Image 1 (tube, one colour):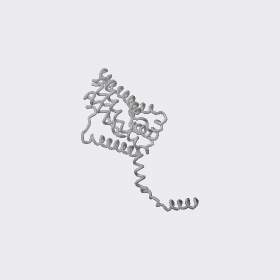
Image 2 (cartoon, one colour):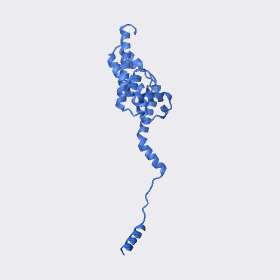
Image 3 (cartoon, rainbow, N blue to C red):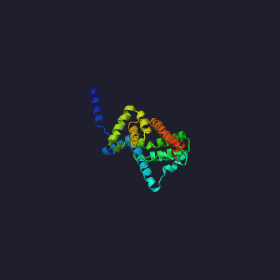
Image 4 (cartoon, rainbow, N blue to C red):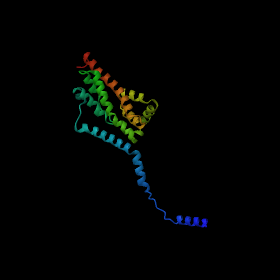
Length: 214
């Protein structure tokens, strides 16, 4: 009797309706998953590209005299290095402002402010790498610089920040791609760029005192 009762209960349970579970379609679900994982990277990359385009096109409508900015004092030096450094890949003159400002201002302060401005401007390159720069990844120069960054770390950033070269933007992109912490990247930039601009400012200072610059 007990066996028949168990059998009946089992048949009753098996005849209970099965609830259907809604399964989302494949493509929208994949897009949502992709956006959750990569959305912030794409937004940071697009923001850096947009800022670069704006800063590149801005001088076409409002020409910037970087040498004249050097004559505006410490604030002019800061702006003269901040604005061009914020562009990715497109180089702009910045040494002239530090050189001219060094002829009549404190060379150390000139170098520190110029280094600070140039360092803050490099955030766009870092964010482009953090968001994943497809264009840079195709460059053989980028691949070599990234290999150096992965091997030697911040020492490469300091040296490349000190030596004027058009490839430093690629070092910033590589730093973002390899997920070097932003504060460490900025510190390395500040050390290298400040040392460079202090030297340039002293060249202007010595040029005036030695009568080489009128």
